[in-house]
Length: 402
Image 1 (tube, rainbow, N blue to C red):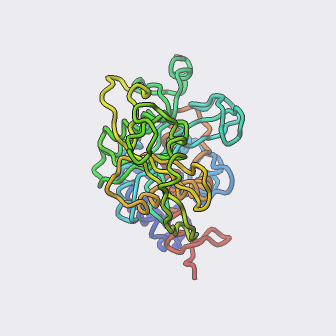
Image 2: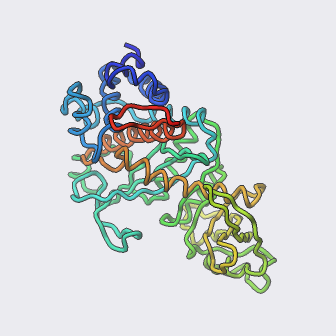
Image 3: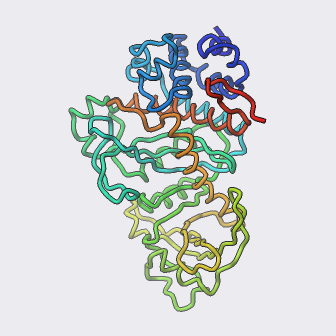
């Protein structure tokens, strides 16, 4: 049975024929599944993520399939099946690169609040946005980001030594032997290596590194990435810019201190981002990242970067700070790349939540990866439907917007 015919019979009649986004993405990601029953369960799960209201549990997804998929079959498809999620992610990324004007791969951490402690990777951590310690999973996502939409294509789950050194927990979660502990920066590097290994056109990496070790920027640069990273103001750097008269080029300073010293050389530029027009100040300083502060194995020479600061014109604080190895791109274009972080954050709240990106509750490592892979496909479908002018009516049918 072809996927198009299958969609009509499984998803409720001929309206499926008028949903080209669902048709195209389903065809792209499911044709690689080796067995027809896997393709069937995959369609059930993907359709359920898009149609189910509230939390996306196996039971609620099964109900949305109108009795055509039992809880047990869907549970096995996510928790106990053998299909590999990597080819599906690769196919989704390739589709989005053809479908959208993808400007960058945006790497963004994600915090997932959990009530219990048994789901894979859950432990008590300090959550900066909440200002207190909470039970959470932490993940890192890579998003294909365009000016009008962002959608995730690859994920890594942050697992601490407390999880990986506990043989019982590791066995219960079926965590593969090759998975090692590391911080969010390590997960970001692994995901970038994944993307590089896929036969896809190169794109800059835009990174929110405020909660990561700053060495990830150096490591990405050394790996050949064109990278621009939002950083915390406390990151130690050395000014290598003679324009900052009176500031040592041998002494490390916090990034915020360096940018604070640029008040006399800041420039005003007009910005028009996400339908909001505002003038901003920008400043850039040539800096080096001291190797002795990074803890990179093997050491090596200091690397030269551009430290950028940007804030609302007329306000003289340190603004938002970015570190980049991109030298030949105008300021305004670099800031547009940086704005993709906001694009991803908006789409994460508006769309990813609706398709249950955080709703996985099981213990299984592979189950988590399979769930977020299908939720990423659902996110892409929902986002592109909006972009194409399709809206859902109260019955759930897709209609063209006026």
